Image (cartoon, one colour):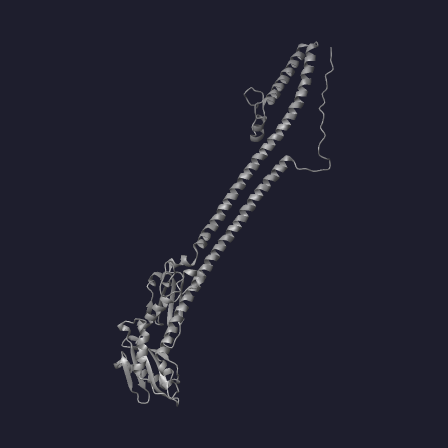
Length: 442
């Protein structure tokens, strides 16, 4: 007896896509997302590398600016020091020789030498000159050549000064202003300041002057200038700078804590140096200023002490220099790590989405196969009830056995919550035994 086998036709779902539209496949979308994440990582790393490079250049520019600024101000201190020393020597000549230079071309009696001596002693008392300063005074009467001396200007030194001044008077124009020259006598340098007393007829009636050992007096004047004059502007030290020369209060900045200075002549002979000059010899901030004068000039060497730089350059600037590049590099590493984590998460998400898509496919296939197996087993049972020869019956049993095996596989798939047996096959690519026999298919 034959029965008609039921025909089960799966209904096709209408596609949600319109025939004319184009959309990316899931694999293409995953690849696009991974490419976007990777491109973002590379763009972040490249941008931060550029920022770090610019920060390094900015740090170098700041270093160069600080170096140039400190050198400029070191030179400024040297010029200010030298200018103030020369100013005091000009004032010295003007104050001591005022009775002479003030009488030029005026019909007054020539001043006595003791008047010049009195003014000179009063002036030098403020500098506390030692006995080795070699102070001396002189008066030379030009018509007769007579010389009157006091102090160290007596004897051979006085004659040397008189001969030198007579020679200069014979070969130079008459000048009413005080002047200065340096002569070497018995191996020592003597500064000679002098002024001409000019008679009403324009001739030189007499020459007055004073002399001293140059290194001693230059050193005394320079020491006082160094102690009293602020040699750096307030833009660096601000209110802490000591403008009150009568005393130094706690926390104030003084020259000796910042600068080492040395004054030499053009031949390199040291006329004076500060107490911290040896400590500043290795400073990278050094400047040399040459001052030209009638007495041969001076060279003022100035160096910023290494311990003085933090006082002038705020520590926060140095900290910012050290931390800026390190912070940018740390930010670069952090963003790169975050980007790599995001890239790894995107890859894991892509695998999960692929597995879920395959899971949906497997569920659909399981439904279709169940329908087909139901039809096969129903028809096999109907054939088993009909009369068949032994050979056909044996083949029918094989069909039923394989159909039952397929049903057991499908039932196993139904037990998995997320098709855990299918996911390893999809992700790792190795064969999985779905029959439950324990041996993977060959």
